[in-house]
Length: 357
Ligand code: PLP
Image 1 (cartoon, protein in one colour):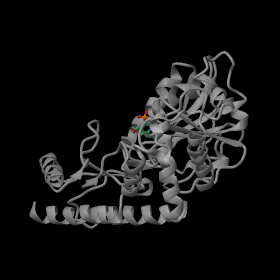
Image 2 (spheres, protein in one colour; image 1 turned 45 degrees about the vertical axis):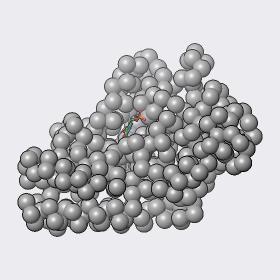
Image 3 (cartoon, helix red, strand yellow; image 1 turned 60 degrees about the vertical axis):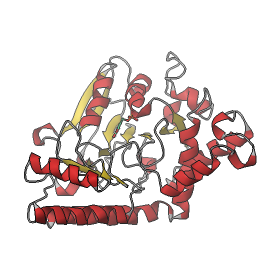
């Protein structure tokens, strides 16, 4: 089967196989890692292995901490304003689709939101040259969503926010392309697209931001709690962290981030050219300059044909091609683990379907 769902993630099949092999007896210990103490040496290696591997592959400078938290990327929508905004202060938000709007809505419950970009007028189908965006006066931070999973749009560059910390939700495209981490105060991502199973959220946070977290916050909500305890203040999401470690190791063996960039570029080119070369049968609603390389959104001539397309693709075991219920149409999510063969299967089906319908 080929999995085009927007999440939870497809892991590389080799990782699923290794997990299956190790599940009952982890490396001859006679215990499953799932029942191994998170304070044990066995787990320590897994936990720190994931942290170190992430630093290496994503080129994270030494003045950043890599944390693994629970609560999904959604909890970060609250934690960010609780730690860095506060009542009466203002933060900058870019509104580019469903996820950034959710992040901004939570921030507005804590402090003031200054909208620096709003894609509403163009129905969130386009972005801007991010280098033209500037933070507002006295802003506490500048928030953006690198890839809007539902709308299928992706920022192609980053703003220069000076002393205002740049904070970015990279849930649906982390590790799909190189990122100048040093430009960011914080990067966060739910694991379940490119990193591993759902249940862990990765937070990459610069040391000076950790120091700004207020003592008045309850323990779990405070980034400092997690930074000071290497994400072991409470029981961490052991299983996802273990799987993330395996995914990262495999990525390293396959050329690291550079290898992934080439792999993703090829897949996106294959799929978008199938759309663009269909004489208008398939149509991308997204401004070509900001098309996502992870979530490819497209329309057919009408909704009946879209329904038929999705049904027939499902019958051929190509799953998850239905667009999000809020926007309709079709969407193929081609995260890191999607193979070239998977995309080729889809493009040849698309060609065939267009000629028959
Ligand atoms: N941000 C983006 C860009 C997403 O795609 C998603 C989920 O799909 C979320 C945030 C929410 O993540 P979670 O389900 O981990 O809370």
